[in-house]
Image (cartoon, rainbow, N blue to C red; front, side):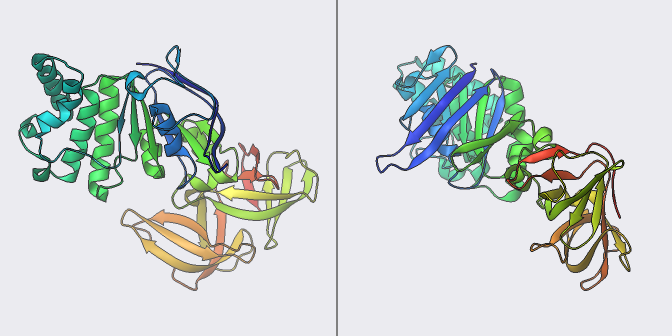
Length: 372
């Protein structure tokens, strides 16, 4: 096992295009770290730099107590699992898993022992004499992971390994990967654009955006206390609702926010911004409740769409002060409003977040909030 330290890590290509723009990140020994972000944000490039598959343009990379900027990939103590299984079709599972050790001149007995151990961990011992064409997608991915395990690396690197699997198999493989990390207790770095994978697998998550890390924290920290609008909007499905507003005044009860549609939200805390300052309020869909009928209070909305998902229903509604529809959730066995219904939304206490004009979190409201 090993810890990693990335200091001002940069990647610039020959055409001058800077992909990684000075990343600082400490990854703890034995940690499951997830890199998440939209396509093209630099997360896979960072992983490839750690693996030694991309040259480092600037900064330093330490694996354990070694700086490895110039160390060849085979000598870094890492093993990488790619999105593509990349199995040799003419070899059996046993031969595929042990091939790296065979190239390294290990004895047949040592190779067999390592392969058997990895196969037992991954529960594929019964598949060792099959060839890849006789395996399902999930089984092939297990073989690819097993090929990495037999090398007993200090660090496992996963580059979107589940993206080629169907939805049900992805859920199963997430459970398998979590179990694998617990059993091996080895440092793992996992790249994905899927926020569900990030939230369910990671001890901590690094949220990437345009070659930079916006925030690092546990899944719950990022979900409840995002540092800015990007993180708040990226994590969560449906995403957080954003309401344009301004600070109306500060009173004894707290700060009064004036929503673009004319409603007022009283935050039982005082925001460190003057009256008239533009802000954005963020509310998760699960923290909004629906009330049918005339909107004497709350956020007046018109129902536009209801998605029935079995255990829950996601309802989308339009509000005069928002260019995007607002989403809220209700239980699946609850009578849902219908398209065209008018009513109001009310946020639960301790759930309204505030962001300044630059999109940076002002502070989180840990006390109750009420609409007037």
